[in-house]
Image 1 (cartoon, rainbow, N blue to C red):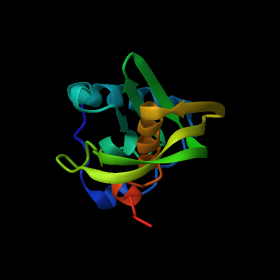
Image 2: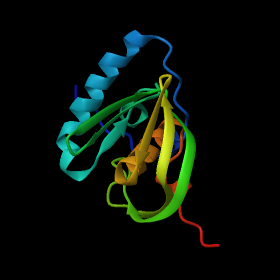
Image 3: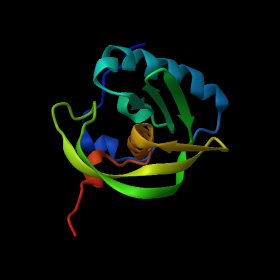
Image 4: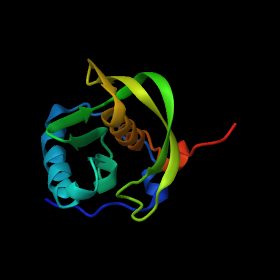
Length: 143
């Protein structure tokens, strides 16, 4: 079912709960995919809290690759980079200069995964949502 995208920054700042019941995953993933489909040409993923669920699940579609992340945690980052105009479906029309990393390692439901480049940036964005962080929390700060 297509769900409305949450645009309330306060609501998005609440961390999602870890998934403890595997039966929770499939219906949320289906709603993530359904809700993402009309937005596909403008972005790369959605997190459960962006469509009203408080579970730590996100869906990413990049090129021909698709990922469902359940309880993901970033455990290693390398090579900080500045993203000049990161956007988000929850904040349409807004672009923020953010700090991300060119390489990340995550644990996704117990499995170690590594990402680089654009896919790594997308994963960072979606995982941030699950922990109640938005692109505004990653705003680039000059030193």
